[in-house]
Image (tube, rainbow, N blue to C red):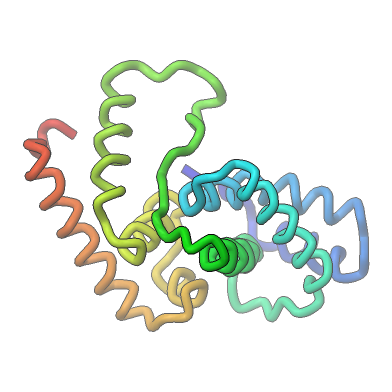
Length: 186
């Protein structure tokens, strides 16, 4: 799961970044980089493309910090920038499949076999979902965003987020059934 920080810390850092405070920018980068990269890994396949989008994202944060309206968390705003840039790159490449191929987030420790299998099963099942369904599940369950935050990030009504979550969970359950996996197996 994503590590949480008080909104005030992010807001203060971004306010300072808007005044071209390089130390605040570095602190904001350190605070949000892992979350943003984790999100991008779940959207893009190519590590060098991920790195390019990260650079573009933080350049946009540096330039646009003064434009932040404060209607969402700073991290949500930054992920929104990364999302737009990632989809722009995907359109350029005509490359529309997402992949959940990300590094183990257990700080380099080797996971035991059972959780690893669960993770692989979930990864395989998630790959069968549509991009829209995979994205809302990722944002809600892995990035722990609220429905209103997802709504703002994706530019869709909250009820659409709820509907996508409902259908995504239903599709995921059907995929598990096709794989012969029951609730007890997970």
